[in-house]
Length: 269
Image (cartoon, rainbow, N blue to C red; front, side, top):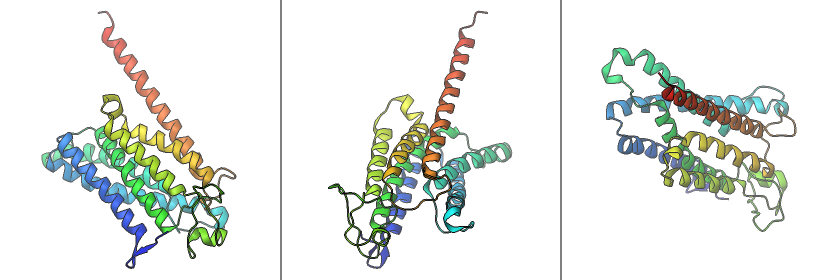
């Protein structure tokens, strides 16, 4: 709708705003609420940027894989959010494990003592806000558009936009980007404002599950091509199902472990 402001890409502006919001929440929450010392936080920021790099790589690889049926070959030409998200979280967990296991015992100044779950839960909070801001950038740039609709909620993208090239002049499409941004802002508000310990301790799983459901449903309204590797269903819908299964397995595992721990605690001597 507004691809540029004074010659500057609005998508780039909103992407930068999203990353800034994520980074500020990540640093401020860890330093002020969780009292992570400066030396440890600086080490973790290094791991964070490394994991972001891994996420971008996986995002490009998955996009290229999903679009092989359309392109006829493996070719880099875009990124997919799920690759960024999954690569970022899994990469951070991997780098955290390697850092703590290999470096921590030999260098006191490089110690990372805050639990990994704390970092992942705070990261999920920041990512929900940053992701929502990024989707507004998608709307302004005209990418990730929805399919045609006669609803009063439909929007008409201007000449030259991707939606215009796909459907032609005057065709209203679903503003899927704004729906997704609204959903992400609601997830962020829930994770931030609800102070129940179980909610705060499971922010990562709540974000993953809530976004998976949101994305699965919104895929039915999407109009742009995201890859035909899985036939009628979109790759994002298959990934959404996989994420929901992962969250279910992890929560079930935690429940079983807690039950066993409780049984052992109350066992007679």
